[in-house]
Length: 112
Image 1 (tube, rainbow, N blue to C red):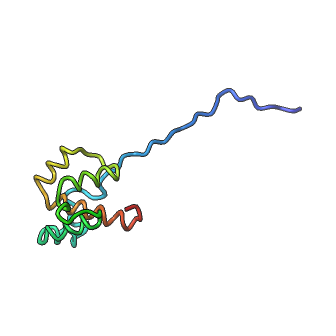
Image 2: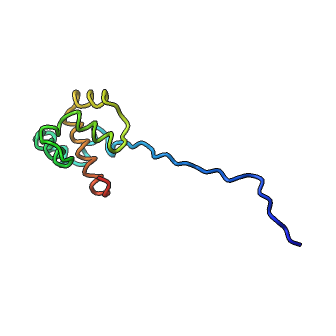
Image 3: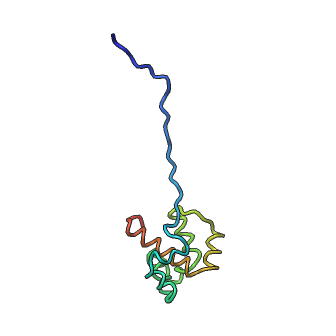
């Protein structure tokens, strides 16, 4: 006896949308990279120049809200221009350190 399988339901195509990212470390996660934290605390402008150099920008841009916004947008990190503005205004060292830690991690992962 030859039995045939009857298909009663068509397969459904699943479209996977890329999920928006998160910062790889929190704003106040200084202990995750003490070297970056010390540099951001005692040599803020030097760290800003490192960040700007990593992103092929002018050294004066490294500590700005604009560089944070460009980076956040490039990697699909949740946030807004308003949030970037307030983060940089209220805690410039923490935001700069967070950005540098994220850059370092993405470089290690090969996604920067």
